[in-house]
Image (cartoon, rainbow, N blue to C red; front, side, top):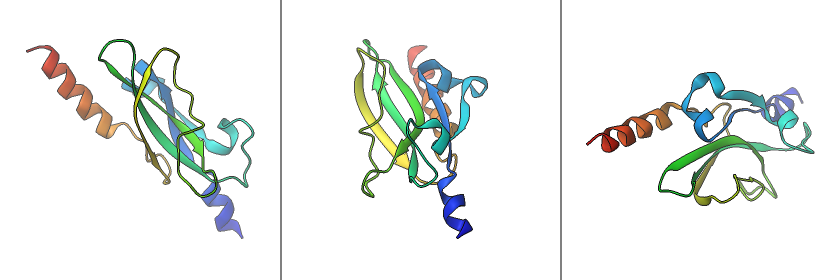
Length: 115
């Protein structure tokens, strides 16, 4: 039926590192087009991956990830080299990895840095 197609046409925000801090550099992508080897038949999630780059600065990476065997996971997510993974959150609604929660953490971080 048509609802299956619609469910699979998931859109997620996509960005890496500093791009995620600005709406102008954050893309919206269709997961079945964005994930290598992805098709309409696959099921996708949006993810927000947090990682540390060398220092203690936590950066973010967002995008689409395939659901493997019904498990929502981030194992096919590749983060930048020489970084340490902190956490990965996945969600299954369109554009659910939005930036609203992230802006708050950036504001808090900036406030801490200026003390």
